[in-house]
Length: 373
Ligand SMILES: [Mn+2]
Image (cartoon, rainbow, N blue to C red; front, side, top):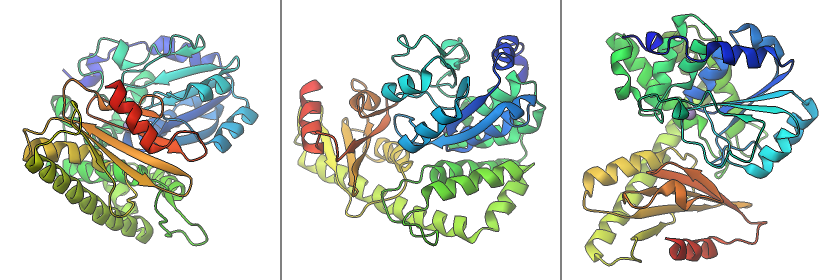
């Protein structure tokens, strides 16, 4: 059965009814292939004329910056549509709500939405009885809900691969080997380049100290132009900036991965536990720029140190904040839960931010974690 057939009729009319009843829309989406493709899908629909602005977030609580928050409030849309992300910054959600409708189109399990009456989560696959609801393509869902043609399918596959979810859907798509190869390259590339953090001075955009936002903008604009994966790949390959940034990330990625694996090795040899939950704290020698490595580190630890059961928390310090990324190989403890309050995530990986302007310090946060778990 094709995925499209499986979705047949799924809440299409309801979705369109909501969009029809609003005159101005702001989109907030995720910085990876699935998030950017969700926007691309939406902008192919007749509703594109209602879209006043689009923002992309990779914050661990899926918030936009305070500057962007102010912009959205001044645009004053009647509907804010979140795609491929479930926002968790409730202070910001309350500020954005103010009589507006908030609509979430996502697949991950959302938390704490009971207190936001104007927030609609009916199109959240997690609540809709889908198999593997946590592992879904939002761009595909979006193009389905809006009755768009199948030409988004190969981009959706790319998004699924970027999220390591393709294996759950492989039977639903027909792709030849070459398309699958391109989908893998682009999906992973968007996952890592889109997740660029401002924690290291990238210095790749002249006149800017850091280029994360600019690179995200470039990724979206080439995806917007592309009609096929091949075209997308060619557009990427013609950009020296994107290519050199990807190379730099790859080096960073490997360095932090190796440092993390070495730490687990030492920890295994000492075989002494930090506390009952085997909490390991890790500060890499140099700041890195990408957050996506935590997924691979988790997989590599499981492969290479299958007896390790514990939680690893990685910390980076910048001028204004501490960036925290974490993973858990312990089935009793969720990485996402650990970061509740300063971020969030899934059972296996998560992350958060501690601002230096807040009263919290990483040391105090860690003490608190040790007590809580
Ligand atoms: Mn995503």
